[in-house]
Length: 163
Image 1 (cartoon, rainbow, N blue to C red):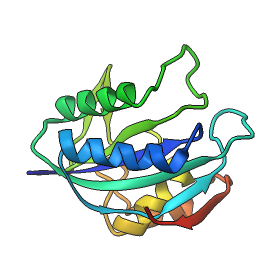
Image 2: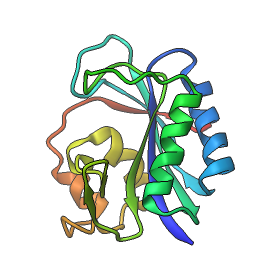
Image 3: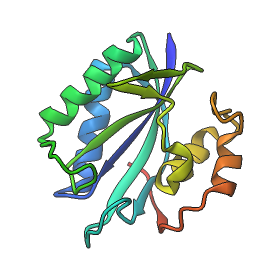
Image 4: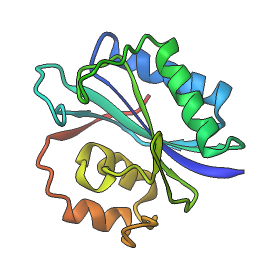
């Protein structure tokens, strides 16, 4: 079994329902959720919107390879109604990202692990730190807690509870 950390986020529609549905589908098709962070309300990152996101991080044990896990995450996004656009950052009903997978380092056109922007995003670091603060980033050689302390992102991240 491999261990993966998966980030989920949404800022459209019934945000909590989308997070719950994503969790359910991840358990059905990707692996067992061992733990999950609290839910955080966060400002959009990389674009402007009045609609705030709900974000959380899941710790999953999986038998899927990294490409298979990516495929499962993309199928779940599509199932939940995500429509990809040409814009890199935009509002969405669901976003599911593989943040870390074991200590693997993968740099391919369609898959980069660890996620290349973990260290720049408080909306990822705060929930990830909640469930795995001592985990070492395999490329940067620092703990998630250290990366959060050094993060220059000043976006608002507010804990709102669990699901």
